[in-house]
Amino acid sequence: MAPSGKEETSSSPPPFSWSELAKDAVWSMKSLVINPEFCRIVVFPLLIAESIAMEVIILNVPYTEIDYSTYMQQIDLIEKGELHYSQVAGDTGPIVYPGGYVWIYSWMKFLTNGIENLRLGQEAFRILYLATLLLVFVAYFLTGAHIRPYLLYLLVLSKRLHSIYVLRLFNDCFATFFSVAAVVALQVAARVKVSGGFTSKNSRWLIVLCLLAADLLAVAISVKMNALLYLPGFLVVVYFLCNENLLKTALVSLFGFLVELGMNSKFLFDSDLQVRTEFISNAFDFGRQFLFEWSVNWKFLGPQLFSSRVFHTALLILHVIVLLAFLFCRWLSKSLIGKSLSQFIRDAITKPHQDTICQDNVIFSPDNSTNFVLWVMTLSNFIGVLFSRSLHYQFLCWYSYSLPYLLYTTGLPMVVITALFAAHEWCWDVYPSTPVSSAVLVSILLIVVVANYLSNPFRIVRQDTKSKEE
Image (cartoon, rainbow, N blue to C red; front, side, top):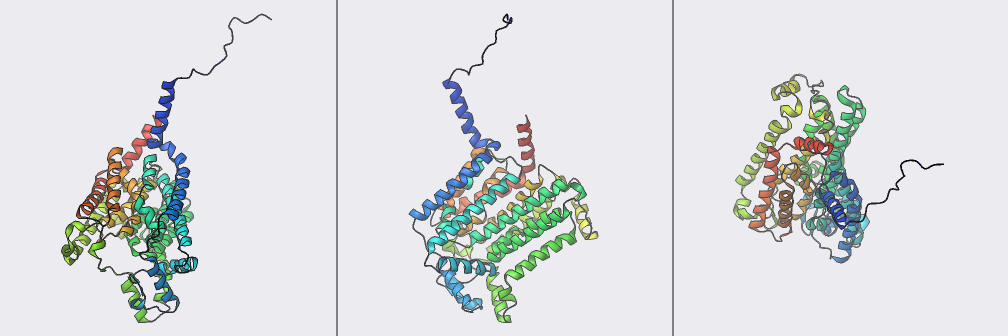
């Protein structure tokens, strides 16, 4: 058979080139930092690395006793029948936490046999840290905001945060876990709502997820009342998820309130009036005085102003003003709710039992719904942190998981975001805190809040989506 006119050419690999190899290496390194598609690639290596790092810390860094022995002393007194909060105390002071704390640390007391087996307690907190970190990763991915990998790296770089968990065993860590879980539940509810569309399909699952979020947030509050800082954002998100139906929102909130009563029932219903009074005044003491020497955020003011009632009142007023500014000018803006603010208020007042949501509400947006949930919830908490009367070192875990995300939603360049994060970490690593470290910390928190007020995180999502399509 005669050969064809054209000879078949065998394909051969391109010749090796050092320049091409260098280009591939640069592309890979760059993608590991800024390419959203690489986020899922780095998640499990990060979790494994953190698991190993926590174990190394446990094995090589001495445990520091601060409050855990006091927790055990308090739980021991309660287990012996003492329910009067004024009589329940330990080496570092009286009990100041609600019933969820008592329930969790009763289990911790069983696990660690008081303070006899702290290593088991450290391992439990190592697992708690990893579980919380996994939930945070899920929350970031659910935003659909094309989160960059470098934000995930920032989540695991805090030296202080690692010690708060496995070297201190603070109850704040449990409150954070349940708070983040509540946020994720609301994000999942938002995704379910998007899939159901304006016709309200999947409404049963939607209500279940809202109730679950209310349950989780109530448990967080029962561990430590700082979780109340999420409440304004929670009410906004649930109101949207319930189709702007005031009655449905009230029922979800009532369920959370009943869970809260249940978590504290031992002190509210199974005891006399004095026990109830002491419990409420101690576990939910909004006027508690903090020590200036432990303050991380207000050292630059001096002890006299720090303890001033005028200063405390000013912080409360500023907190309310900033929340209202975000509520009416950002979270309830016409571009997000699809109607005027006056119409929104009129619908809530005149049709409290009806669904009044607009089809253009951000909660129906496939690109922005879950991002809106995380943005509102984390900002609600973050604003409260900014205006807290005092931040102690363990309070870092209240909001550290949200800092990379809220820096990203400012729209600032990556270099600036990284620099602000590094400066923030420095503030928390300075011990004891100084006027300079405190001033820098408050400045960074203020920058994040103001920049988020001025920015449009949903514009960032659309730009990232567009660049990816191109």
